[in-house]
Image (cartoon, rainbow, N blue to C red; front, top):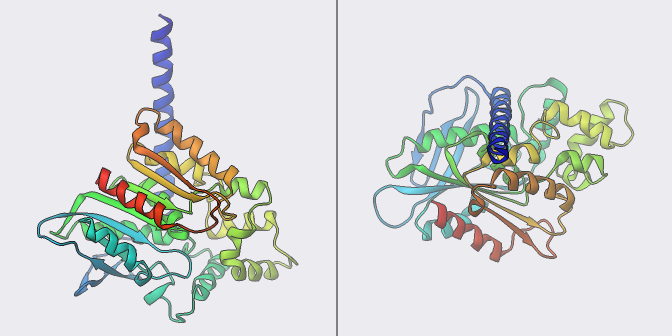
Length: 326
């Protein structure tokens, strides 16, 4: 009898967790949602673009594997200041393994930046969002663009839309776990040097390195409010305007478990100040619980004595993970 009661309680806990998870997904999707427009794709050899919404077209690049027929797909998302072209070595490595490999420019990066100077326009956009409440250039808008990319991939006869994976680096790593958490079409996710607890970092004065990736926007916002120097309290205020929920409802420990039971590999540096280890552990422990019934689908890679970087060995493990599960 006790075993029966215990089993019922476990099932009730799973059901409650699933309900909470779906509510989180729905809340995130509602926040990033916008009117859908026709994709209106344009293709020029290995280059393509599609409409993400009425104002934004997303440029992409595709590296095709040898052979004909339908291929599994891996989407690659770059980090702050990066471009889709910067991902070509990874795309080629994936294509050599039989994947249709695709990368896009994130919002205000690459072809989507008029200034073409690193992440200047990206930070300008964050400050504009802080002032107006319009758009979500920090992470969320590119998650939407990635979901629209999957819409586009579903139209391609060469793409097997039932086998889509995603890997991202730094900013792209965060976008990867956020997208995979809310879009079940992503069957395999490999967020690299991105998984973290924003809330832990804020509570423990470990937020400076992450904030450094948008320091000029943060400093300008603080100046407008008469704040001499941004601190954790002001950064919470900044996040509330620029990326609502990023340190609460949509923080790493809340979002990472939503990927289960789909295959998930996390890659982080042991001494990466942008993803502090104690906060990372909170995320991993939450995910482990979600993968309790399918532990083989969750892999943790910690690069020893490594900061904010992904070494060749870890990248090779990521490619092998895609090969295994796609």
